[in-house]
Amino acid sequence: MKTKISSHLSSFYRYVFGPLLLVLHFVFFLLEDPISINQKNSIPTIAYCIGALLIIIFLWNYLWKITEVWKDEDYIYIGKKQKMEKVPWANIIHAWQASPFRIFRFLFISYKDDKGEIRWIRFIGHFEMDYKGKHHPEVSRLLKKIKEDL
Figure 1 (cartoon, rainbow, N blue to C red):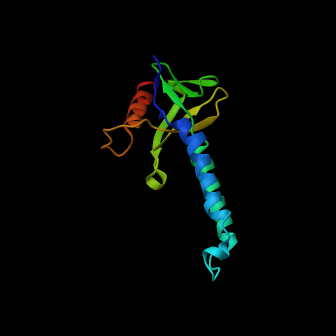
Figure 2: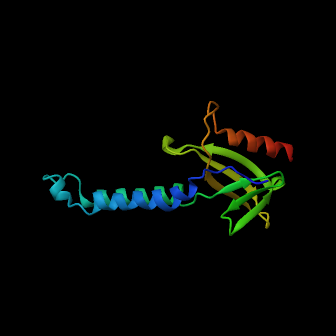
Figure 3: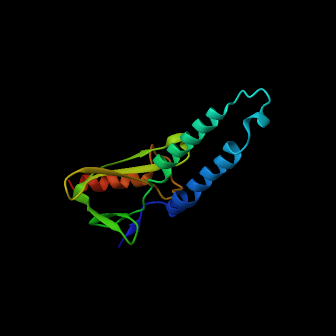
């Protein structure tokens, strides 16, 4: 039986929260005339453009590359239900966590694809109340399963 290990809000973060953050950034910072904000014009328009670029890079790197992940006894399933990639546990190399800006708990899985190339995916782990360790409990479960299949 498949168990979803990514957050149920993954699609929300990818398709709603990310674009909403970008739109709000443009509305509040880029469309406002910098001279009317500060009469001395100490914040030039170029700073707004740099801010917009940083927001776009953040959204692209951290939110738009989020995927959904399921697991069962034999495989990890990556992607959407319509287009899902099955990866055998024997092909999983490593699992780890990163928490940029302490906003999200991104979990990563590296694996070998069918061609033997090493790939990795990023997903947001499901919510856990028991978050006392150094990383998300799902990382521990994934690492344990990876060691069992070696």
